[in-house]
Length: 165
Length: 408
Image 1 (tube, chains in turn green, orange):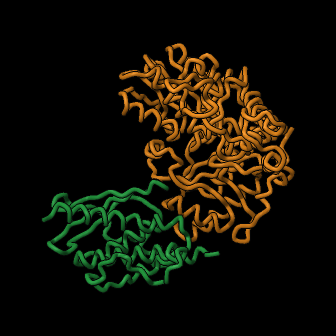
Image 2 (image 1 turned 180 degrees about the vertical axis):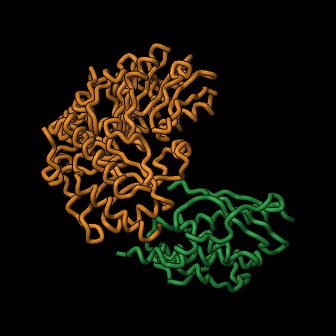
Image 3 (image 1 turned 90 degrees about the horizontal axis):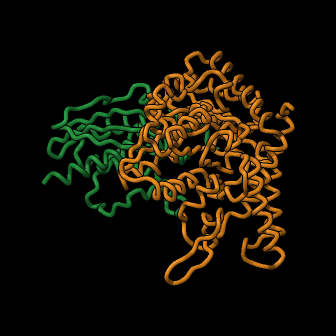
């Protein structure tokens, strides 16, 4: 049975206690998207400001558990200043890490994380600190906590790509 | 007679299991209670010896199954002080009971501008059906507010009730534990010409319940919160109300006659029981009611009140920073304690407590408007039943120290 130390790694607790990129951005030029976790009532608002093809700035407000907050904090540092392609690749890689559990149920190979079908466009990204969240997959109920901010980022990116030519 | 939790615990087989190598300390009975051997055996015996569809066959086991199913209805009727078994409609749970009232009674009695009064501490199941009716036909919803002490603010009761057609209120809050003055509210509602719907999910398992003494017109209960199985609950309503209401769901069982150009509904209560009902579950619920009745609801209440008082005192002594929501006087509340600890998120609290085998609920408890009123996104909630004792409270209090170490 997985223990608490699998879940609450020191780097996670650090991002929880000292969240990065906390706050708001003026709208416009930034765009805000709110995500909900209906399971626990957590809400997160993500402010995203693009500069052409680049994530110029990102900030987050809201409340949540150590997993959702640290995941949001690490996500913000991972995508800030990156190109949209890199941000999308990071999202895909992170989500693949979160769904390792389900893939194993399906009998798929570990590490077959890319199911996006557009591998030729894929840019190389590293998850870095985010790897610390790998333990979350042993606690399936908490996967939704870890992915809340990521799903909110996807919604924001999708919205912005739909309104921009 | 006082409850001996050591003896009671032996009646609940699940309490023998270990979690993370620790004794299971189950403190989430407000969400769903555990089941005594009497309930589990009644249901398996029914399946092993008696099962057949009810109200259909003329063969022996079909008659026996029908008799057991209807005996379950009679047990529930006696348990809540109903005048007749025809006033007890089996539903899935309180959620379905309230939806039945909203769809059947609500759609034949409420029109644009009609007022339904609810409270800020309602479970979503007593909010969403009425919000849907508001969206559908423009009824007006008013809310009795909650005071800072976690009580219903009745200071403007008459004003809020003015012109109301229905008052929907929970007897015991599933978050705050607050025991609401239902009779007082019902008398005022009736004086204003309104019907009274009582959500009894957290009342029936824990306090003596008498629907007539409460002054209710509609009353819902859920089996799985009162030591019975999931999948069964009941709506009680006065017979003349049920008689006048149109059917809720259509199908088998609920009809007297079906022609290709129309149908005639069955008598109450079967008019509201479309399809094959939860038969084994009715047998299990009956066993649960018998189990609770044998202990005696006054004894259950005394036990849980003492346990709640002990928990309130111990938690506050050991953790002065712990915020407990709701009244701090155990005589005003059921065995439900919602709390927040420093900035530790309830999800993290619950996760840490699980490591010690302690099960508490974390989240909004299907009461998001109340969470907003309390100014929190979520709470942790410990709740008690007959099988809990002081050692369970001590386990909770000790396990919270781990949260302190990790997060605070």
